[in-house]
Length: 527
Image 1: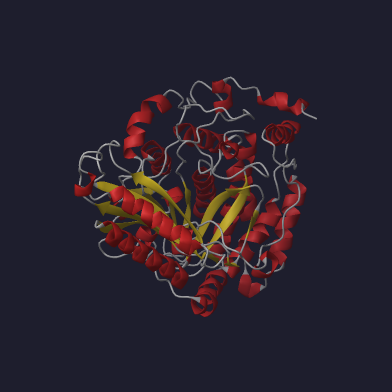
Image 2: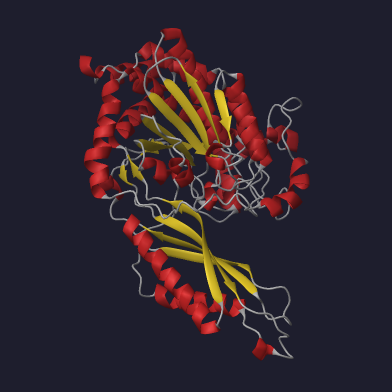
């Protein structure tokens, strides 16, 4: 959006508010816009650096320290190890008594999704290594830039309030945000803005239509014996795992179509001629309400106990994670969407559009250009009836403080999620430009929240009077449950030396693509 249109959009947004609903001024928002633009290089470096680290859940050590260090150097007080999780932190800055606004996004990569950015074919950087096939390398950089721009305006104009930034650790394992809530990390927070990479630029309110879930590992114990010489003396824990899976798959036919459930066998014995003494299976049970999630969990527990009885083994279970169903706050969404409209979509170059098209053609997905038209504000009515789907543990925070999720346009339409396709653009100008427009909208909304008490009052009233009357927060965590910080540790101990060879060096190279020898501008020739 050009400067004249941008200022006009800000004026239009401010005119809709009366004296009792005075948003941040157009001049303050213009200053926030300029503050984000001034940090475009920082945004690019952060996006590329976190992409190059490629750390999976609970192992985001370099990522966490890198981001926390930037905030610390910019006047934020950092508390590491939040909720007993080594890679979690909070970074807080205050300009005096006023609203406390939380800004967060996820930082973890996915196992097995290593991929060269800027290369449209499947090409892993480290064979079998982790990578950012969900684009989680971009959200916290966006929030850092937004916070620094808002902080500048608040300091210059004497605007009171507090900003708290936090990273989503191990979101792909759905394993931390319920623990954040339990630890009181959001006590005193008035409003929360979360960010997730998308192919569009928007926000939603009301029940999101995705599923909540519980992550459980069942471990069966039996007795070893020679599998050929004395099998009758053994009790196979692996048989119990297989029987549980068969039982669940039989029961699946008689469950609502909105549920989603899946499993992997995490341990199945050592070698075929020893009856397995120990075997484990890891389940995700997903449904659309707290009661239905609990119902699936209880069915799974009964099937596990039945499998143990049938095989004369024993079974224990461990909760590895939990995610509440998502529910966006309407007043916050409306305030954020007004700023999304004022900012508008990025100005895509010929290379951006050519790269997107080349990626789609190379991977056999629908060819669709990068978006040039904003989608409307997403509402329960516009989304229609949900048939279930994935999960995001931001839901636990949504049921704690008024929260919305901004989607910012840093990826390519129709790329498959949790696939290397979704990593291809995540250290390219497409990702960088999406982060910049997202940061502008967030920074402006932060200014609205700290200058306009009515927005926060309305957000809290909506949560109490509408959201909390639809359901009750009921996480499946016991006091004994602890964050599963052991996950991915063994894998990263093996992978980290290989990954370190690909870390971005911004002192030598302007961009990560330059470091990798990739000429992005060649894609301008794609027709």
